[in-house]
Image (cartoon, rainbow, N blue to C red; front, side, top):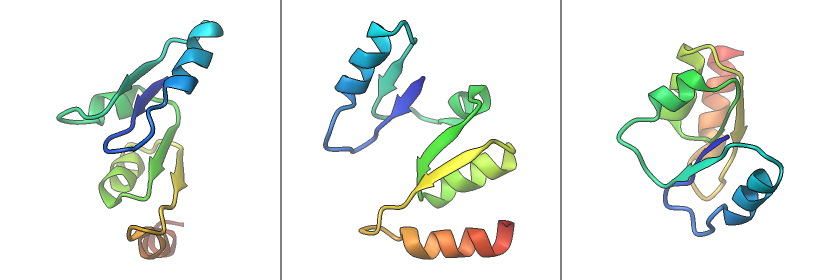
Length: 86
């Protein structure tokens, strides 16, 4: 499991502890120059509603779960992508 949590206020340390306890390899980081390598290696992408993340996942034809953050522009982005890609 790879977790990039960027500017998130809460560290996913509890999730990391659960992974370690259950023998699941887990890598957690805030930022990298690019997420493309991690995205290519993944079998599922869970993302906030960032346009770049969504477009990259669609271009890679990866299964994608989008979590909307209404305090950002999530609602309008979801509308645009569902209208154009589904």
